Image (cartoon, rainbow, N blue to C red; front, side, top):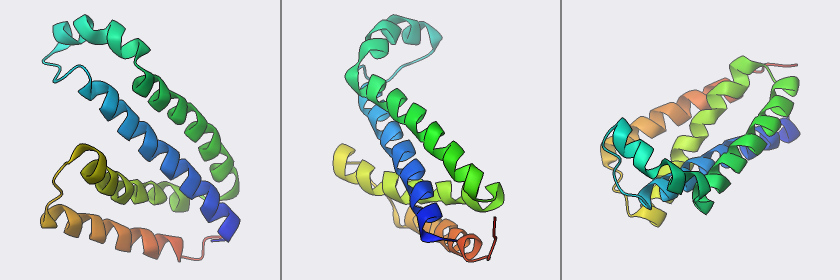
Length: 126
């Protein structure tokens, strides 16, 4: 895969990861949501929460970036690269939210990354 294509894909992955983290921060501001009725009760607060709005904005930009990536790279190569987001999110969730990431999770993430590396080096050309 060419470096510019990989950088576009990584930008999409990072935007997606940031979107997840911002949505988590927004959701954390209202606490656990126990069902649809509880969701209706906090929907207004979530709809205007800066972290939720930022997360949604990151998603919109990531879709645009992803469309550019897909115009340049086979989807069978690009899509598995989204798995890089697992590593980014695990590291940032530990740092930002104090989440525990067990050895078993890290091993699972490592297996995924090995697969992503194999796909990226598969020599797919567009």
